[in-house]
Length: 167
Figure 1 (cartoon, rainbow, N blue to C red):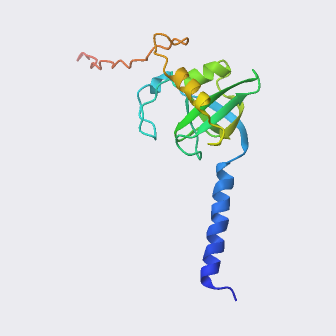
Figure 2: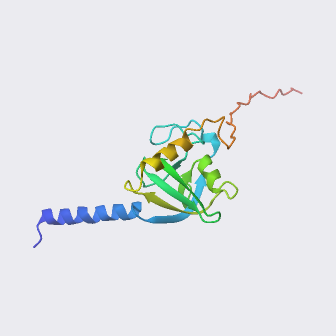
Figure 3: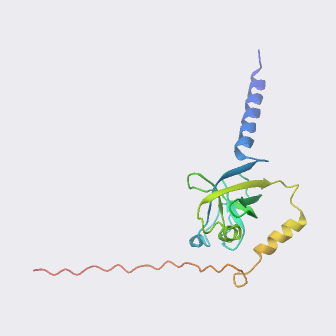
């Protein structure tokens, strides 16, 4: 007979293995990617920071917030490194949402939604040079940024009642 404590510990071990299997640690994932539109500029993300289309950030369902992901677009053979700061995407079939600047860097803008491969970068591979290069890309101001994006403003329409004549 197996003791109840051993049963519970085996169950917890199996659940932990399934969680890591679902999250895809140490594996490549392939699937559709989308990008954030500039209309979300200034909206709070799950991590608490506001979305900026000039920063190289992304949204993933399972990867930990603050982790780094390499996104490769096979149609253009370009890749970029983004930081996970939000949960999503909420579009069916998509595995990652990337910022507008990252989408322009790999050439995803003209396709809209397309197949990409992503890889979670382990902490061992993150070096100081990689971190400084990434922060240098992010620290560009909007006036110096090579991708010009206009902030979309929402104008409220004045609702007026139509005058009807009594006959």
